[in-house]
Image 1 (cartoon, rainbow, N blue to C red):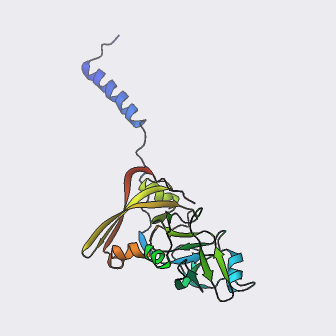
Image 2 (image 1 turned 90 degrees about the vertical axis):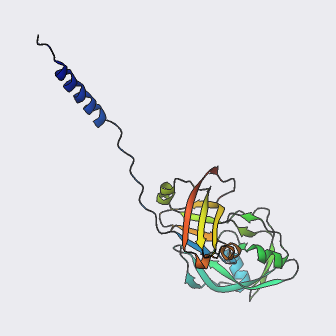
Length: 236
């Protein structure tokens, strides 16, 4: 039997090691870049059920789209209503957003709530249990909303690919870093709202928040993943 030289042994070992490395796990595939980040101010507005639209605007009335919003299928309607608080102070011409929903809801900024005399909680849209109500007045009628007035929690809409890119799940909280002239701010607790593939990457802030960070003059916006776990808030 032929004697293996040291060179032969080294060659066999290298061959075995080479085969082992070829069977190792493939490197992780990089997630595709998400859509450009858009940050919009969501001014005070109202969501209505079909029943409440008819009470306020007349039997058979349907909302008329005035301006299509960034998210596909959603629009600002021609129709507006007045919101009346317990102090009988009024916010006139509050825009309705369509399409209609299963529950009516009023979304206001903090300064709006002070003006109306309402103590409103910060909630994810749709989470209205136990919130204050208000009087809604339209051209054909009015209704007393028993609950549903909230200050919308700042949030970011994402599809599944964008959540994978940022390494987050629906309901988790992120940070939004905003640079504007004379103002650099990080907003905490920007809640991820996951959706289908038609959803576009978009952050929603209310009017007070947008004004405080000088959003209209922002030169850079950036989403950051936080080290904390999922946000404790309720998501719909």
